[in-house]
Image (tube, rainbow, N blue to C red; front, side, top):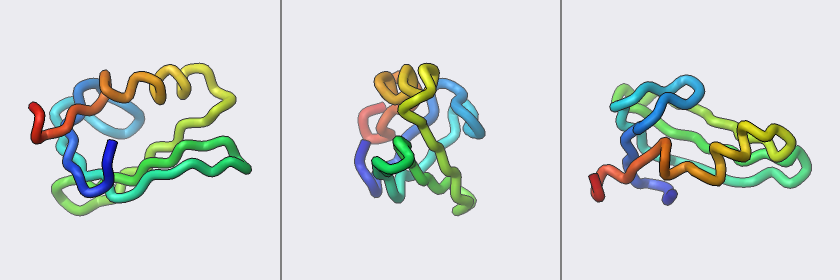
Length: 76
């Protein structure tokens, strides 16, 4: 996933809905906390944060299969 690119939600994840279009504005990894952080904005310019933790198996399943949850709008 790349910052500045728009993605369509393919599967509900946390507080997103299928079909929603989001733009990734920031992402990163915080080693101290073991968290992958993603910040999106929706079409109404509201921020949506997704945090995936290293120590949570379900979070790591999502992290390793982000392509099942998000698709680049340009490639849709």
